[in-house]
Image 1 (cartoon, rainbow, N blue to C red):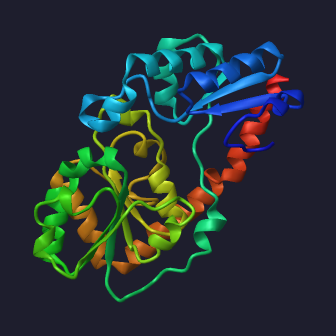
Image 2 (cartoon, rainbow, N blue to C red):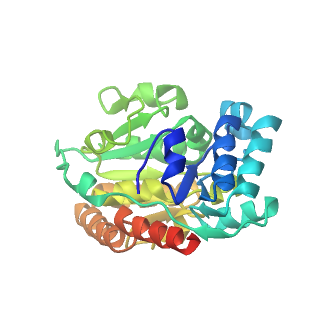
Length: 300
């Protein structure tokens, strides 16, 4: 199996199966159609419900929810031999647009890459949140609880990605305790997360988000970092509250979960260790690779 950023003409001479991951352009669609013509089996892999992006996601909606992109994505779904999705909810949503066989192939993490980075202990408890622009819509879920935690404890807050000072109106009140870092490529992310003691994964309970995967919980967990996540799919699919993470809905629940982990290092360590074992047992990329090979073998 070879991972490539582009498909060349020479690839059609030897490939048995081609996987098209999250593609949405006519130029790549033409390559899928050519593969079908040559008898090469095709898989369309999708990890977001790209056909139903809510307007609340702002520029992401404006960029991707166009008639032309939707048309091309539908053709990918309809022309592929099979579709792989990252969650059951996403599979159900995709089914509305095609009759192509769908397999659930959840996301995973290469645990070895994450555990290789030692924890950077600076003597303070640091809460971390990493997110793209799409997660700015989730700020309201945790803003009140985080503000209360900053007032009631001496915890630090680290923000990675596009979730930064512009997202909260109270960050300026805690100079020296707020650490902001821009967008980080996934290969460098473990190093940026090394000083995080508690990870948060807030997400609005809307159909689009229910189709996502719990990849942020997996990434935190691979480093032994306990996670507080929203009490809805995708996190309720993988997180056992109180054992491999904590789940919260209301502001008070977010505050209580965060406060419990901030003041109790033993609880942080226990949940973090449980989460690592859960990821090792169920969510390693090596397991996902075996599942993908089995899917490919079934196509031949």
